[in-house]
Image 1: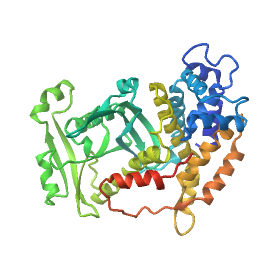
Image 2 (image 1 turned 90 degrees about the vertical axis):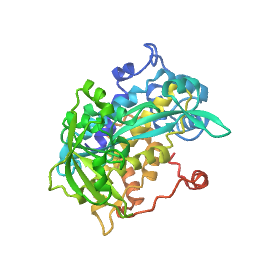
Image 3 (image 1 turned 135 degrees about the vertical axis):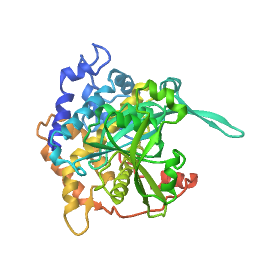
Image 4 (image 1 turned 90 degrees about the horizontal axis):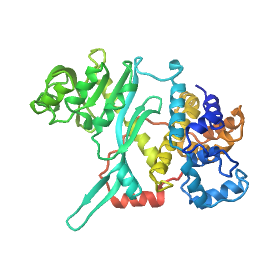
Length: 430
């Protein structure tokens, strides 16, 4: 799907009366002539500026998108009329359209590679938000407190940089339970990649029961059968894992298999650490080196989480209600996927031109897309190619080298380093 089709899709939806009626709270909302219309509210939320609401409203007036100035309070009242489901529907539509032509997308041996992981989000600590999403308790010898926290379970296409599905829910729910809720959209031509938090008997048994392909990194203490692999005695074997006795009743009630046959592969990382992977892929033509590469691709979802929380400042929520949290969250997912689609073809071209592959600088692309969101989506231009061509020129000029072979030793967390990053180094995209 080309970028113009995606842009036109959003613009047409925002002008569609049926779409507006579907995603407003009351029948009388957005029926009279108002300064803050459905489209203006939608795009303003989509931009998710880190500036104060008063400044954002003043800029809308100065740029000519609203006829008279409005206060931050008026904006806060107006956004209560709009449901967050509008962002979810458009996001699902973009993802569906992107996969209409599978031949244009990247795959591995005809498999779509999907990483699944969970990201915790710190929320404004109000009572309604804490009730909806739960809290995390902090305890020290002299101090006890808590903060509101949500969990974002995401299924991410690591080769095409697209968030294809996700859940925003209580921050205390067990990650594999959330991941199980995302399996309905997974196909038998997909390979699911999970980290050590998903290593158990129940979860891979569920995947095998559904006939899905997977790669899961193993914990050394999960099963006794893993010990020879962590010790370097075995590297690539097919093993049968029996159900732990304490899980017998639960597995029986779920009608899952009482034993599972999986392939265990051990690979050595550049650090010297042995990484043990459990997989349903039995084809011996897929070598341990292939599995090392495949699991390494899982890092793309970690980069995605960094973009959401770093570049896009997702945790800088612009409201203190449950609905505003959901609006900010799903609008951020939408603009992330939209940026991927707008820059997809250009990224492929940049990777093939010149001695050093290049890629889009996301700090630049998100900044331009957010700044030009009204020009692209609101000006009733059914043919947005002219504006998108200007964006492409900026993206190309600001492209950066793409060095996938770099390795940086992971440093332990440091409060001082984190504060220095937030105060001096972090780049706000808008």
